[in-house]
Image (cartoon, rainbow, N blue to C red):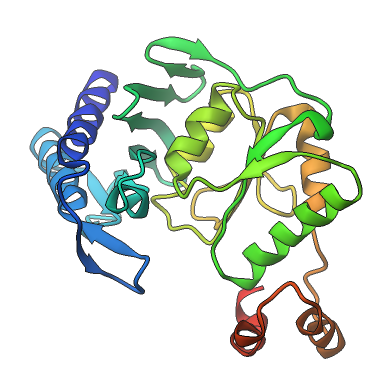
Length: 288
């Protein structure tokens, strides 16, 4: 199965690469920045057709085509093109992702960055590999010397995480961080030790299948926001080199019990543009 996964993920990624800079958005899903291109669909077709031909009894959950035999013993979780918005805007930061799960446990994970020809693969208990060379997370142990990734969704939880990071830097606990809009690429960089931590919120199952599994196999500590071991289907992800993890959690954790007084205080400060405050007020109780 290992070679099969590597082969089809590269085929899917290369199909995307062939279309890079040549096509635009095909349609939008939930909003104008949640888009689908012909490359998404082409890569998805390559993966799904290959899996169904080789493993007809396996289930498939794909961002592009939904669920098929999701209760099967083995289920493939696919994001044929992670970073579609980057792709559509001709920004070369995107990748194809696939994971194979049995029940709640991921057994294999693969991410392919076709622009830079970087294939990361992991198998349970066997570590993580980049182009067949074993990789490991960084050994950085001082937060002020670290570099990582965060999300930039305009959702209350995400904005508050980023505010915590800004507050930490304001207190001279400096860390360099950015959002690449592709957890596939961010995972490759953290798993290979080029960056030190990754914080992500509000993704789909396909976003949080291969990445946390690969990061764990690369030696990262991987948890949810409460510091509990990460599990499949959770929507909050914190991964970092082990010596930084407690500090990472300390910076981003927040009280999850929100009184009206706390909500009012949050809305009064200047972290949000005025026109967004009303929207946030409506969502706070359901999304925080």
